[in-house]
Amino acid sequence: MVATTTRTWPKSYVGLGNVYNRQGQYERALEDYQKALEIDIKVSGQDSPDVAASYNNIGMVYDSQGKYEEALEMHSKLEACMKREHILSGSLWPPSHVHTQ
Image 1 (cartoon, one colour):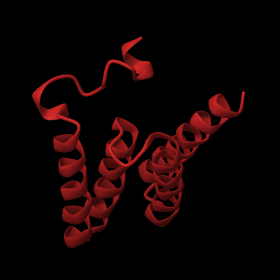
Image 2: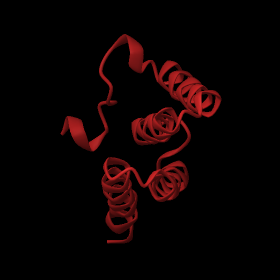
Image 3: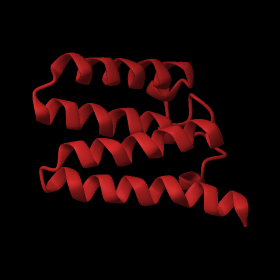
């Protein structure tokens, strides 16, 4: 139960972040996306698809704010994460990921 709950928390934060982002409440969106990122790194490791998605979400908020240097940094982390997992050469999700089962 703990593992399921731990994997659910980041998705809840991402959902909240998505709502705040659509409302233009960028700082609140960043807070929730950052919480999701921190949990995903602890649970799934630095190179998981969930971590990559969090880097993308954070980068998109920075882009919406006109903070292009910060956006570039997040998207660079996303790219590095994807390359390390060889995601660019195939499926976004590794065979063991919940989205492939």
